[in-house]
Every structure is written in structure tokens, then in C-alpha cells.
Length: 201
Length: 201
DNA sequence: CAGATTACCGAATGTTCGGTCGGCTAACAA
DNA sequence: TTGTTAGCCGACCGAACATTCGGTAATCTG
Image 1 (tube, rainbow over the protein chains, first blue to last red):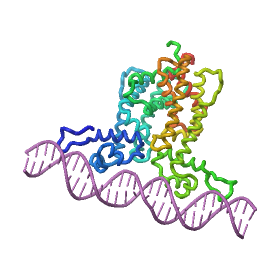
Image 2: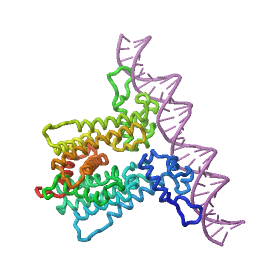
Image 3: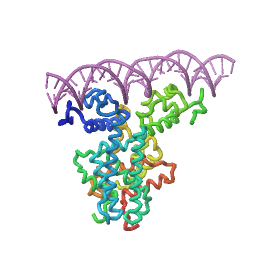
Image 4: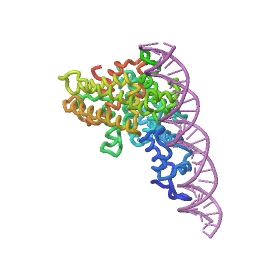
């Protein structure tokens, strides 16, 4: 239980550690399926104390979604090499997205399950669509460049690509035997070079 | 509004058409986020009338999940060719799973979002795990046969495979320009032969 | 037509929900 | 020790929740 030691007044939860517990609960039972009572129990607090730290349930959701979106968009803005082609850039984005997804797993998981039931959720969905659009552009340029097969529609390619990456939240746990770097490499390899045993291997 | 014409008594909804409307609502707002009032409004019925057709909200969920699971397990039991190798069988399962997913899209979508909050949900999760296990076996045999690359763990391969297939529910709509058969072919091609422009193409 | 059958409804049930409020308590600085 | 700040709690609230129940309405069979 992280505490805000080193500050004035009575020590207790800070927003980040409170958020961590809340997001874990949201992911296990679903946002709508998690009551404030359940959060309070996990925190070892009373329901009313939660409102001392955040304005309400929806703010918890907003904080979590914002954190996930910030991490993902940061990947798009990384420019590894100005001279690199679109294909190399695409591979980089996929590889790094896997790493970010693993590093911010609970927050990204929550983001990917948002359905648009409130203003906060709809804003997050809009941001996600913007992310998808920018990746689709990159795929289109990679296809034009000849680095990605042209017999499959770039938009479809982009959806399959990030469908695979996003599906990681359904099973990947960073504390297992599979390291993040190994996962990212395996995923990039399978997606770009195919499942079939390569002739060169 | 489908009706049970041709039966005795006052005509009205049958269970299937009621289920169809309910599942659509569950997918749009989430199961927990959908109230019986919302269902009643979409059905053009009063809340209480719903209980004439089903025992409650949870039975609706159970019916939907059962339908999705039945359709998916039927694919595993299809034996296209007794002499076919594991690799061909695997490709068949992937291809047909895409078709089933498209045909039963709302029901499979709901299944893939279940979190285990009730006995009904937990039973569905158990069934899903059994499905995953059987696919993983198939991948393992395909790898032993040399039809699938051996430098990636078969269990990981299996997860990436069905992660990609399952991610279709997030965006695919059968009424668009993309036909189911084209989707299944494109997905199988990308996964097995890779995104990169093949030398032979 | 009568009687059976099925579908539906309004009103009310107890429960759980997210959220509020006033007051109490622990730790710091002075 | 005293004042200040921050953290916490029990009791409570109105609204929404899934569900029940007694009764009504529409349709078919004979």
C-alpha cells in the first residue's frame, strides 16, 4: 500500500496508488460491474474516503484512460531515424506498441474495453480512432514503398496488425517466463514473415 | 420485429428474436451497463413483459453465450479430410472460425467480453479455455510436422493466431464491402505467409 | 359464441448504486 | 502545546436496479 510519506498532514493513499487498485478491479469485474463498495474493500478504506482523493468513479476511469492514451501516442511521435523508410517505421511502431502495452498493461486493457457509455469513454474512443488512422497511413506508405504485400488492402492490414497487438491484453502477464522483448520480437516476426516455416530457417 | 405467427394464443415475440435485440444492446452498452428498462424500450415492451419470455437478465446472457460456444466447437469437430496433416487442419480451423465469427458475430462478440462475474460467465470462460487448449494442441502437432515455424513457441503461436481472429469482432461488420470469404482468405494468408511482400508475388 | 392460451402491462418490491455530509483523527510545523 | 493540514469514517440520500404480481388484452380452437 503506497503512502504519501514526506508530505504534511496525516499519511495515506496518493492518487496513483489508489488508481492502480481501482484499475485492477475494473479489469477483473468490468467498469460497470465494479461498485465503489468493492473498491473501498480492496483499498481497506470506507467508500466515502475515496471521494477525498477523486471526484468520483468516472474520474478514476478518465485518469486511467488518459494514462494509456498518452503512452500509446508517445510511440507514434518517436522518430527513430529520419532517413528510415515507412516499413522500418511501421515495424518500430509495432515493436514499441507491444512494449508500451506490457508496461502499462492494466491501463491499456481498460482502454481497449471502453464502449462509449459516457462522455469520458467517447473521448477515449475518438482518440483511439485517431491512433488507428495514423497507423493506417503508415501501412499505406509501407505498401506503396513495396515493403508490405500489396495483395491485401492496407486498411485491412492495419486492422489485423493492431488486432493482434491489442489481443495481447487478453492473456499476456509480464511476470511470467515470457519477457517483453521476446514477445515483441516473436510477434513482429510472425506478423511480417508469417507463421509458415521460412525456407531460410 | 419477428413474431410467432402460426401458433395458438396472442402473437408476440419468440425467444430468438428477443435474444437478438438483447444481445445487440449488451454489445453496445456492455452487459452490466444495460438495464432491463433499456431492453424493454428497444423491444417496444414493458420491463415486466420480458419476464414472460425468459427467467431474467442472466438467462439472456446464458442463451447468447451458449449459442456462440456451440458454433465455435462445431468447427473443431469438423473433420475435412482424415488424411490431412495437422497444418492443413489448422488452416481449416482458422478459416472456418473466421466464418463462424462473422455468422454469429453478436453472440461471439459477447462471449469474448465475458469477465467471469457470475456462474454463467465462469462456465463460458471454462469452455473458452477448453477451445484454446484444443487449438494449441493442433498448433503443436503442426509444428512437429514442420508446417509451422519452430522458432516460436507453439503456445504463443496459438495465442497470436486466435488473438488475431478474435480481434475481428472489434471492427468487422458483414454488411460492408468486405465479404466474409475474402476476409478469411486475407487473414489466413497474412498469418501463414506474412505481411512482407512475398518474393513469389 | 365460449374457453383456452399466450402476450402483455402498471404498480410496487427490496436492493444496490454512486455520491454527500458533518465530524473525528493522525501527523506535521511553530 | 496549539493550530493547521490532510485522511478518514458512519450515517444517510435519491435514483436506478432486477424482479414480482394481479390483472388485462389479443388471438386461436372448437
